[in-house]
Image (cartoon, rainbow, N blue to C red; front, side, top):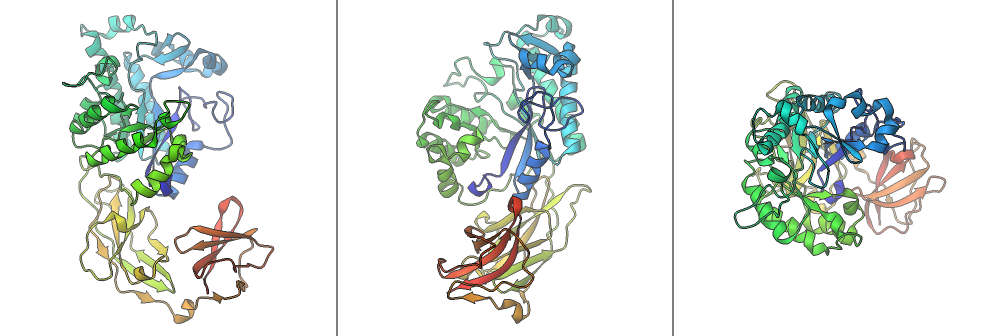
Length: 502
């Protein structure tokens, strides 16, 4: 996904009152072992965070709010099941259970779940799913709750306030711990009827009492991912409405790419491509894809279109200027050159607010300009936590480029660009690049042991894999510059050398 330009992953961390991490509050979901309540041999949430951050992608913990589980799963969970531990929070709806938003303790309970995640994990966001009342097809009876807590309000207004109260409690808990963690939700894709377009009874505010645009205005949400799994007049007017009512915060429409499947609506790729173009041209906050499998499986060529035609340059996460608008000081950068490799180093930078994490972005600048301006097309790396960056330019014309590093705080505020100082070349002996004409290379005596050798081009793309039991035969390579690496178990790899094939 990172290679296709995706910069954020929503990882389902609370499923149906079950979790994808070792929780002290709720039992494990059955997705990992096949048995509800049984722990796997690893922590899926911790693993997902590590892998996303390794690729400089954000991870938001996806928390399903009010749905609990099927009655059959409740029986399998036994005393661990939420309806048995806290029956006062739960309502049975046919063959499933739901939390009752009208009971004040429901918000307290869900806030505890979000608090547990934010205290224990380095998540970039909390994403609330199904933070709404059930749709008409689900039998729902909250008359007793209304009698107890309604205080004379109209039922619809009371329900909207109940959901808002839950959002407010979660917001306060999360922001007290890590104020830079983004809070978002996925409301129904149509907020309400529009003056010139009806929602035909299916909208967020009136049908399921989910007033997400109000949450933006009140600062309870940092961003939204409305579920816009529609097309035509059901999509475009409502997408425009979300953008116009965004209160200056990112609204990222969730596109129903599962409809590309022949088993669903068999949409052509052009339907999704038009929606992507429209949301970009109207200045929306990006695009989200539900579900990821239809993206990574390249259904109807969507992955190819996104990676080669649409996301042609990296996209930085919009800063949360409503929470903090002061950028860190720019780092002081030094660059050294070792043959075809550049090494940039800089001193760590602290944020203006103590305790706020800082990462770094690296840019390549045109060698013949003194103008330092942001251009994401020249972004080489983003979200770096370390203070060293190495790379080998792919094209000869870029080997004389200047470089710049910026500091970015956890709110997304980026420092001004500061160019590197003059290049310091390492001793010439280090620049002697081995050359092969017949395709064979002599390996250094200190080459680490590994089952395979990996050959990559200077952009890091794998070109060839060779068993380590053989002497590397590179005769089939096209002329050019390459990197030879070891390749061990689980993909662990170490550089051996750069070389040139003539």
